[in-house]
Length: 481
Ligand code: C2O
Ligand code: CU
Ligand code: CU
Image (spheres, rainbow, N blue to C red):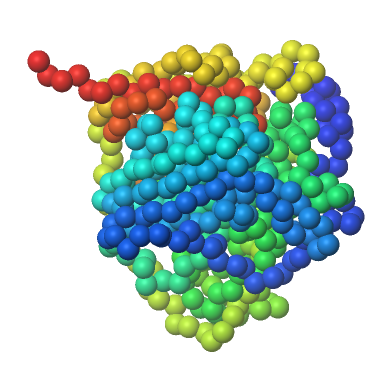
């Protein structure tokens, strides 16, 4: 909406102080980080994970003396974390007690298309269904689950529905390290501590809350021993917030992305986690620090035309507190696992994100488009064939960044094209979400392993809900005659 800056500015003002909490609304700070509660396995059967998930309104005391109405899985914010071994069979009985249709989407997992919780398989209010799938034995990493109904995904997630899903490799080379999980989400509260609806500006830019939560806590204290090497999994479960993560005073190494470990640790000063992405970091703590703590920051990030004053400041997310005895730093593992590059592509696709705006009276007037079209439930936009490697070029023809996400597979980014220069990524990795910055194009290799209908979309959930989404039909490979 570049030419519409004035109009846009008015929308922001109309949205009020969406970024500043009312004076009476304060969440507790500095409390020890709670580990994400795990969803208990109801069976002892080897290799099987069975549980029940209920999506329902929940009353939570987030601010002392106030009752916040949220929507939650099993009454928890964030939802209970699912942790399973690679190759497991998963059976989840799901009940929808929300006033809207919903689904549970297993973000990043290669589940059959009819178990993927796509908008085509809605569970109506009062309804239930069984989600069941078996994961491949050689597939592990850091995933999540969230609702994915037609139209209402953004609202269901900002009201509180999202949870972590970790698949463990039995031969995990980092299993000896202390591990913590940080699921980052956004919360906005009004002066009666309720979660308000989106403003028009939220629909345009994606909603950001006043509170960035980690495991449901505001600015918690994360304990790590002086000198220790820590494995940290981080989820960006925010609707639209970009997290340029930094921890000044410690050394950071990327060891894993959306789809699990990379080949070898890669040292970084900071790491950009776009909405829906995950990263595994090794954090090497110093032996000592001023005040005995470091600060985990979200550094300023300008996503295209966007830059509210809040987005120009570094935002403290958590204190990382040096706790306990000094430990001798364990050696940095040299090799983590092999990532075989996907074969040479034999076909290609172009995906173009664009925006179009006429006069805006309601969110539906925003045009968030893929290949010039708004999402339509019953239109197949793209066709792929099981087993065929394709080169996709995802082009951002709009004025702001959009995180591209594809269901059903992990893909490999080959290059990012910026001002005509194709830049290779610093390491090969498995991704299901990749940021396509303003005026960039991202080239990726992808191969679908299951037939069926899949979604691709921008993971700024407001954009997805307003139509920056498309249907991909994956056809079975033709059987040789
Ligand atoms: Cu995490 Cu189609 O979504
Ligand atoms: Cu997904
Ligand atoms: Cu977008």
